[in-house]
Image (tube, one colour):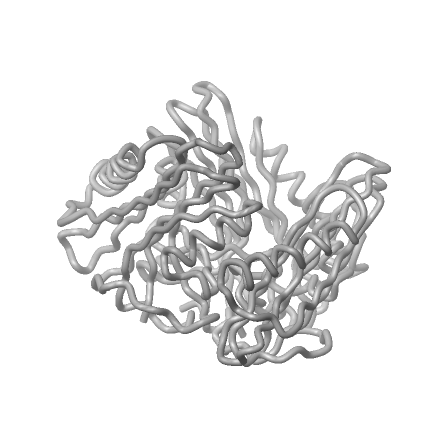
Length: 156
Length: 156
Length: 156
């Protein structure tokens, strides 16, 4: 549940299409494996000492803290993408930084942008050396109303 | 408090009018009976096994997880409405789905739309049979700045 | 952590500038002393009985419930400001109200507006006498992409 201190994280992403924006976003969450949970949006910090895990099914309806990017479009034929990146610091007692971005076009563009934003925030602003950057992106070509989602999930 | 696993839910809705958007939204929350709590927005899943309760006063200032729709307008004379619907699955071990929508016009339009969105997400996307759909809507004709709110509240 | 009942609060504000909106907002949070935490946005009520404390460093990565105002601009030379105000009721068993606003121009304008919004919500709508209003604002003249943040932090 939400009140437990997170000890692990995983990255996940997905895409969906539906008759309207909210159903499309819901379909993208299902595609990403977090569709039957209650996402609670955070301002995007990786707590010190949390370790990466493989994506796994979270309890249905549970409160899931995360940072995420999303994009929705109702223009058939349009490609949309969303990406997140997380910077893991060299110093294990320090916080990492999660960055999110999304928009029109290829996923590589946005994934690179998210990684750049992590570098700017960690090494540029915080002067905090990065051990590793992990990132993920989702993309879709809109059929009716399309949505993409990419997130960093914190879990116990 | 927020960390307790929810066991119950209720639907509520309200409307307000004020000199600005935030005060109008605050007045709508008070009208709905949740105005002195700290709402925490969720991505809209009804956890398995939670049961409906009548609306009741939540502790002042407590953290209240919910899914909600809202609409604000500064056009006097305009009618605005907000609606939520929740689909309760036949299978009690499965999650239910909450959908939200809002905009100009009569509340019936938006309440029907929210119910349709639940059907699309539950039966269309998830192939999960619905036992029952519950819904609620709020509406107001704007005087100065108007706001409407409709939500599904999760509570211990 | 987030599940503990808040017993204290503090006001803080900050400004930042970066190559994009999210990095600028992140820099503003760091300037305000909450940049390495996970902010969880609330609908803006001060629980009864919480007392003001000086700003202090929150655990890195912890979930921090708060109400906040923000503003971002990519127009170099533009002045942007954000403000929050909190109304503390005479009756210690009652909830207080937090109001947020932001936009172009001097911080005094927005801080006065936030204080006015508290009076409207507390004395106008709730008929709840105010003991004291506390407020804070941040301001910046945009260099590349600027962001300002002002928040009321709830803490154990």
